[in-house]
Length: 71
Image (cartoon, rainbow, N blue to C red; front, top):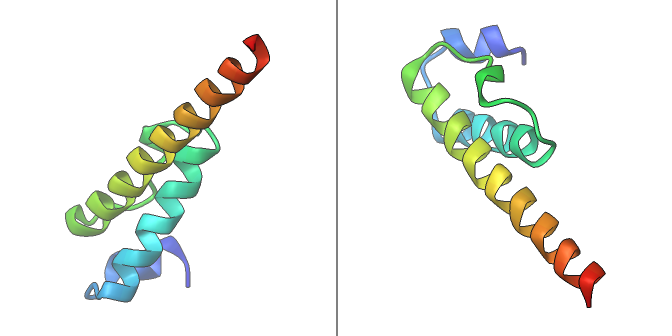
């Protein structure tokens, strides 16, 4: 299912979970938050929540690696 197909359908929990997971992976990989492919407010919000969680995790892992390198 493409981003456009998801964006045009009535959203479901499955759709929101998929958008969240995609956002999480984008955040984890360091992609910009502006990369959100969704236009629908509800689905975009799920993607952005995932992005924020992924970005937070990436920053945490990075800080842990820095702490280990110093020790």
